[in-house]
Length: 164
Image (tube, rainbow, N blue to C red; front, side, top):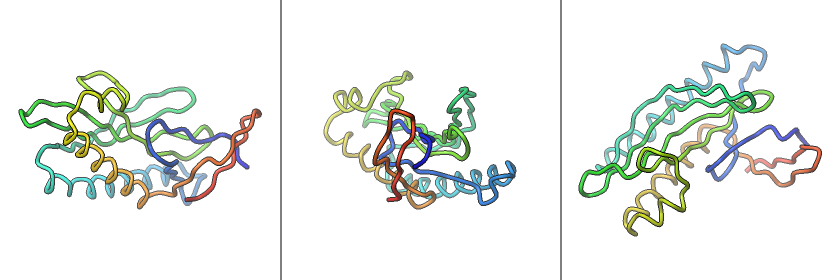
């Protein structure tokens, strides 16, 4: 049983990152940089298969008091007319105590929306494309991190996580 340390918004699992040497912040930054580079290289290969998306590296921090986050990758989707229809930003959120958790957020028409709003707007083919990219994101997260699911939460903020 752990404290309720992880936070995610859209990812299927808690894709967790801890440093080998948790007492040294510099090592954690090196680990994160290595993981970011791996994910970027893996997802960049998608550009060869899907001409309707663009992938960019991003470096934007938010210093939220409890779960600060950093965007590190930006994926833009275009429809057949070339209009941008969706942006997915990949990020890592710091845990409440230590480490980080990978996640992603949707942005439609330059403001944040949830996935249901996006899916109601797009045609079936566009939805299939986005689902395929989300599968690839989740695969890359799983390959580069430790994946957990929460099996129980308690009123005292304790939680039980199980490795997937």
